[in-house]
Image 1 (cartoon, one colour):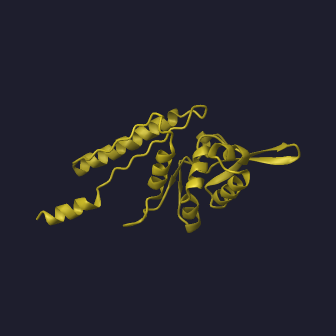
Image 2 (tube, rainbow, N blue to C red):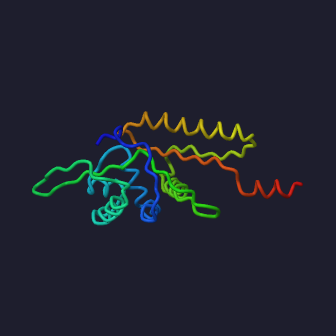
Image 3 (spheres, rainbow, N blue to C red):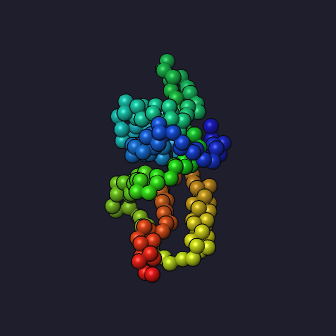
Length: 179
């Protein structure tokens, strides 16, 4: 199944699905499968896992509906399965107040594990925006990410884009105390 035939979004709704995406290794496996199907052996090589571990994690993702077999072929009498993502993106439920933001934690872990001598663009900016500006910036960031996702070529090296636009908790505390 080519990636252009994938549904746009997979909504995580069950505890099993949430447990599946909450694991950093499975997050990295899904990143491998984001642009092209791969076998257990290919996944293991790209993520740096033993084949048995790779198979275990892929089975959990498959059982949760996050990845699926899209092609099979027979190689020396053994059926080789190619796995792909079930959708282009995954939407997690709101973790609620004080809950961990799983995707952001995975992104930080990936950033920390990236080569220190590689090119990285990391920036944090504190802004003061109207609610309209806040909404507009959020929409523009989403559109920019979508634009570049469409340009993605599986033959090129991976690059990760992570952004978080939010009102920090101390904002409400400061506003409440300013009266």
